Each structure stands twice: as structure tokens, then as C-alpha cells.
Amino acid sequence: MPEATFGFRDVDPAEKPRLVRGVFDSVASRYDLMNDLMSAGVHRLWKDAVAARLNPQPGEVILDIAGGTGDMARRFSKMARAAQQRRGGEDAKVFVLDYNAEMIAAGRAKGGEPEMAWGVGDAQRLPLPDACADAYVISFGIRNVTDVQAALVEARRVLKPGGRFLCLEFSHPATELLRKAYDAYSFKVIPAIGELVAKDRASYQYLVESIRRFPDQKTFVGMITKAGFARASYTNFTGGVAALHQGWAI
Ligand SMILES: C[S@@+](CC[C@H](N)C(=O)[O-])C[C@H]1O[C@@H](n2cnc3c(N)ncnc32)[C@H](O)[C@@H]1O
Image (tube, helix red, strand yellow):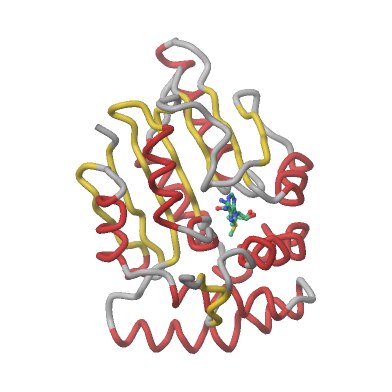
């Protein structure tokens, strides 16, 4: 049977969802604070850049898959409403789906926007009909999914023709110098911050290991194309520490 990755370990694919769920159960209450500490706030700039690229419009159905505490969905809702106030049109609908009920609960506790709806669901088997969405966004989520290719095929299924796929994920630094500095920071500093703030070193060790195991930018473009998307491409953020991948459903 093919194996799945859990950080640097190869595990039985049947085992991975429980292991990943354990990570996010453990970090849910400190998740947003930890993101700010680990990235010195830079993750907010990356998320803003993705929202600007999506440019949400009134009346659109937008999916925030593996949406966690709804960080992206809040941005999309506000932007679609601002456009609606300028030009009119229907309300946008923004769905946050995550398979971890603790993350959804932490997101709901933070508060939502009128356009937002929350649900528990797996990116590999979305509880959604075919061709229902104008955009599918997954931010720092796909790396945690057991079968990434299956999740991409599922993304293609739920998008309308002309719909857009956007994936923000940690990726691979483009230069050797940056890779060395980033390795030193992520293997030494991030697990230590996890231990201090979230009282959970192991979950943050998983985070840095899972980033290294995720396919590089070009390999991931190939996977998006294989799932049936057109014009798959990527944009590096911060020298490839993160990357935005895009594709079009045709
Ligand atoms: C690092 S968080 C990202 C949350 C949010 N998108 C953000 O950018 O802040 C990863 C999320 O992926 C979710 N996740 C992992 N595997 C999943 C799956 N198969 N289906 C849906 N969500 C999943 C986890 O529960 C977790 O909330």
C-alpha cells in the first residue's frame, strides 16, 4: 500500500487524518497567535496578496477549504461587500470548510462576516455538488491532506467552468542562501516557539517537516494540471518561502 507522509515519517494513509487532526486539535486555541509569532506577521501580507489576486466579487460563491479559523474567508467577505457597495449586485457567499471541528469552533468564536457560513468537511470528499463555486481557495491546508492529488480532483469537481483554484502554501526557497537561513530558523526557532507559547513542540516540529516533504513549485504545477486545470502557474512569495499556485477550471 502506498504510504502517506506525516512530517519526515512515512505512515499508513489510514493513519494520517487522525495524526493531523491531533495537531490541529492541540494548536487550535493558539493558532492565530502562533502564526503571527512564527512569521513576524508576514503571513498576513501573503494572505492579503492572495485575496487581492482573487479580487472577490458580489454574487460569487467562494470556498475557503481547510479554512481553519476563517482568516481568508473574512478577507474575501469584506472585499466582495466593498465591491457591492460601489457597484451593487448580490451578496457573495463564502463557505469555510475544515475537517477539524476545533478549528471551526475557534473561528466562530472570533466572529464572522454576514456572507460567511461554516461547516465541517474533508477536502478529499467535499459535501458540495458539482460545479457550484466560482473560486476554491486553500491556504496552508493542502500540505496536511492525505491524498493531495485526490483533493485537487475534488477542487476541480466543485468549480464552475471558468472557476479559479488558488492555493497558498509554504514552498521551497529559490536560492541556496535563503534555504540555509530558512532551515536554520525553522528547525531551531519554530519548534521552540511552539513549546513556549502553545506548549506543544511536536506539532510545530510536524509543521516544519511537512513543509520540507511537500512537492516543490514546479512539481505541484504538474499535479494541478494533472487534476484537469488549465493554465496552472505559481508566484513565489518571500523568495519561495511560500507560493501561490493557480489554475482555471475549463
Ligand atoms: C495550517 S491550517 C490553515 C488554516 C487557514 N486556512 C489559514 O490559512 O490560516 C490547516 C488546516 O487544514 C485543515 N485540514 C487538514 N486536512 C484537511 C482535510 N483533509 N480536509 C479539510 N481540512 C483539513 C486542518 O484542520 C487545519 O485547520
